[in-house]
Length: 219
Image (cartoon, rainbow, N blue to C red; front, side, top):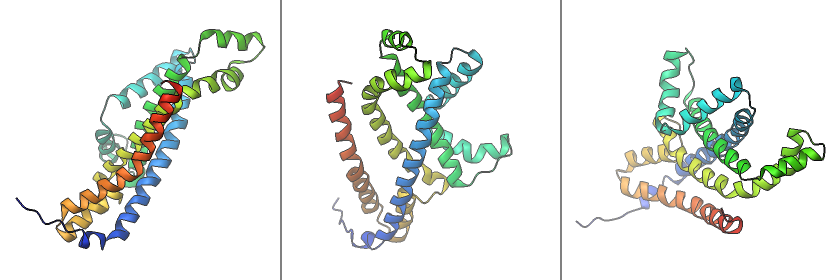
């Protein structure tokens, strides 16, 4: 089968791709930031030693780690109005789902990073009169962060790829705009090839940074 590739009509709609890319990058950055902050809080709750705090935190992490991001996204948009009477806009539902999904994985990265620091470092910090939070900030955190850098970058890459799911709830991201262009041009192969190239152009440099960091810190 000889297929005649023609990107001319597709590139005519380039402004739509730019708009979609803006939404994709925006959702990635905001959900990653919220996910990191929430993940850090979950890690502290899990390490608190109080079951009333640690058990719900562990449950949250396991639920969002062990269910697909697409299912979470659809559930937030369609099920919350039924279960809790909370109606969210497509953008809010997408942001909530991606942030919670990311938070679960960021929490695991933070937990694993802290666990790699020898217990003697905590003891040394306490011997110097530091309180737990001060010890975490000044002694344990800097050591653990070097180990966590590469996994954090890798999770950010996954976060960016997961934004392609938000088109399911009509958020006008890159994939959603591509669907509109494909409907207008009847050239889905060219459209999704263009989308793939855009994702690759963004993600490939980031993955190379992650590999460099992995080699540098032996993660």
